[in-house]
Each structure stands twice: as C-alpha cells, then as structure tokens.
Image 1 (cartoon, rainbow, N blue to C red):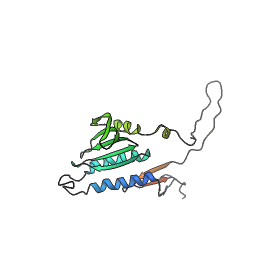
Image 2: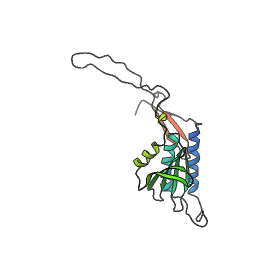
Image 3: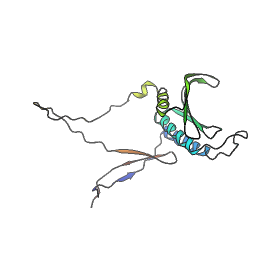
Image 4: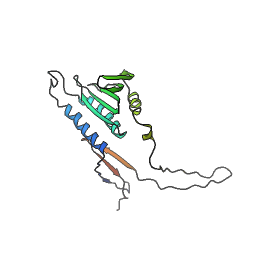
Length: 191
C-alpha cells in the first residue's frame, strides 16, 4: 500500500465560459427528451450518441473562449455552431455519432462557405477548422511561463544545473451536469 493518501478539493467555478458550457450541456441533454414530431410533426429526439459527440465540441469551444450554441436536427442528430464575429464553424453530429463540418463567413442567408462542407469529417479536420476561429493574440500568453530543465555532468566538463520543485499536479474532472472539479494530492498520509 502506498504511503500517500489523497485529498480531493472541489472548486466552484464562476467563469463565463464554464457557465456557457454548463448551459449548452444541459440544452443537449434536454434535446434527448424532445417528443416525436417536435418540429411541425417531424423530428425525433436527439440520440445519446449525438449528444456525446456534440459535448466534445462544446468543451473545445468554451476552452478556447469562443461562443457556441447547439441545435437539434430532425433525424436525431444535432449541430454545434461555434462563432467568432461573422465567421462560424458548424459541426453536424449524426444520430450515430458521425461528423460533418462546414466553415462559413456571413450571417443569415448572406453567407459563403470558406471551405467546402466535409462529410464524414475526422476530429482532426474539425479541430483544425475551429482553431482557425481563434484570434492570433489568444495564442500568446499574457503572463510568463515557468518550466524546469536540468543538465548533468557530461564527458570532460561539468555543467551546472538547478532543481525546480515539481508543481502540484492538478486534474480537472468534468461532471455529468457540465460543471467541473479539480483534484490534487495535498499531503502524504500519516500512519
């Protein structure tokens, strides 16, 4: 048995994007309970497979601090629209969990495709299109970054090194209602 125990801490977040993720997750789950014929006598509830696929892209959008929304499709699938100004990536998730993606510029009926729609899109293709929505300045860190390096003695000469204390490992755990919690090892267990 390990001499270490773990203590988990739950943090309530108040992030605007976390709130959006939570709302969209709940909206997706509600779409699974739509009645048959929910749109003028047509439409079936969104399938759990479509919901799971859509939740992945909702998490991606909110992690990148992009605005998103979700919509049911008549065939039991759903769509995730991710926006930045007049540019939009729309991911359609079929009832079986398969993806298609399109990238558009413009609003309403006044839009044009930036890329031809991709049927049977891979996650990589979708992620690449979503990343195009992120403004360049978001990739630049507004604060300094710290990392640890070390070197040792090699062949005929010595190189000095410094040791940097290892950062405490944090894990974000998503909850089933769209919230999150973090866990960290706080102290060794005492016998």
